[in-house]
Figure 1: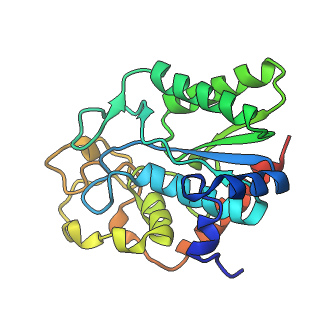
Figure 2: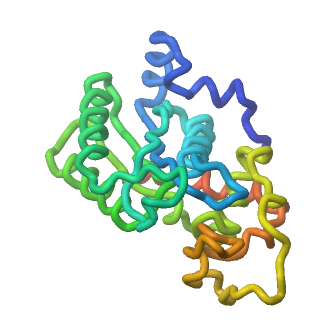
Length: 245
């Protein structure tokens, strides 16, 4: 499948649209994707905004395929246990984020949206529990608009399993923003490095370790081949979630 060009994606990007363009898109498909992320350390080879960049990029491509709008990404998240890492702004609880989302959902419903998909690129347990509880609360109230909550780590059928700054996140971001992936910022592999085979060892939380901040398979084994297939799988799956009950 030929990927959409940037102009095609921009036609679904809410903050770029004039009111008549929004009305036309919602008339054709009253659906909004809401990408969620945060600002956090993703080791030396990846940008700190990765979670929102990937969620937003997948949502834009899903909207180009399914119709609807994409709300601007929210760059605040919660959970993960690494709030003191460099260039990480992690909220201690869920009240602030949930308040923003509730207000946004209420206004989207006022505008005639019939379906909203909360899609998080940041996926620790606290973040997932927050969006799931919010969706359940909203839907239980019998609102005209339905809400679906899901996240990048819940995608089925992907060739790579989810991680933090490992091969999965590196590959996915490369498909969207190849110029923002720079493996050369990581030191070359040293056979004497203490790295557990499955890549989930506690050394990844050691500031003195060359892969500090990586939780998952070593990103130095990243290969660009397959990055676009991974993205296609993610987009296909998100579209299916938008269309499911």
